[in-house]
Image 1 (cartoon, one colour):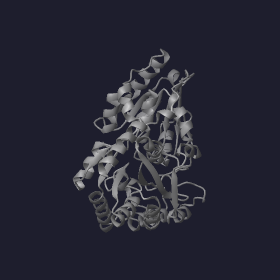
Image 2 (cartoon, helix red, strand yellow; image 1 turned 90 degrees about the vertical axis):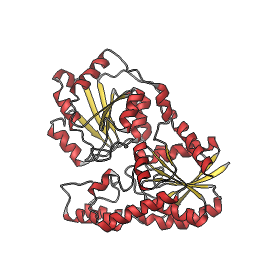
Image 3 (cartoon, helix red, strand yellow; image 1 turned 30 degrees about the vertical axis):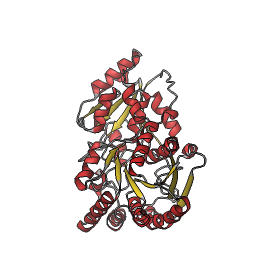
Image 4 (tube, helix red, strand yellow; image 1 turned 45 degrees about the horizontal axis):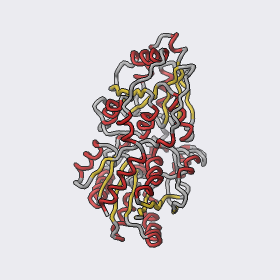
Length: 426
């Protein structure tokens, strides 16, 4: 069996979508002739913790953990957070309530830590990675980001050892939508783009989650690009769906300030009172303050409940029992290629997905092909679709979905494709 060294920052007990992709690859790669060896961090700064994901790590999988220097402790001190509080992924989002100290800390983060706040891991990836390579003798290096700093560490390892190297990008790099909130100098921007081009031009192949992101990268540097979207693990779903006493609308995951939900809130506010009494709306995850402000603006604080992130196994059950699953694409430039991990797990439930985002984007196309839902452009009136779905629920009508399309996104099938890329590269 061939062996691959996998470099990832997010690893159990990290929760959230960032860990799912690599964890499921590690779970299924041995079935396709590749033995994974993982290089990650010790005590990373994760948005949330999910101990249940530890059960998905295959027995016998070797996991090496390194030290890392992160400025997060400094930020927590400035922001007045306790040592135990997690820093959400939208920490760099613009916030009108930020104090001068917090604004200053964000500026320092944006300009002195390029490409991101994990630059303090690069030297440990290099140092410890060389030891792991000497011990394990892998045939290939595979690095998955963000954080994109780890790609620089992988670059150093590949260059020094001569090993073939495959990059994986769950998100864009210099063109990522959150870059708009970074108050970066021209020098920092230039440095970031040079690092991005160095990585893209040096790897033997690059994998992205969508065609739009691949096109962005291809415009920067020509290389071998492969599209491997996120997916769902069939083993996580039991497909036993109870009949709900109320019509349940759920959102799971992070909601940043650019994820515009006012269209949805306006539709809920516009519902007749007798229908409002029949619905239950719950948001599970981490939320920017602006999201809660919007809920209050529409006077829906009594109807919409916010909950902390749940373990992945519980989140899947929440998805399965819902009648509508809310999907929100950030309202930013170049958002057509954003494919959140939750989209595919939403699809696996067979429940209706109400998408808010570009109707011409990659996520919209997948919803059309699968029959799992519909993407509505920002500014759309969603009242009718809510009324129609509540009517369907009362009649016990289930939407017709295309199982053949949905099965394209099984984690096991996607891992088989990844193994094929590895075989081509080596």
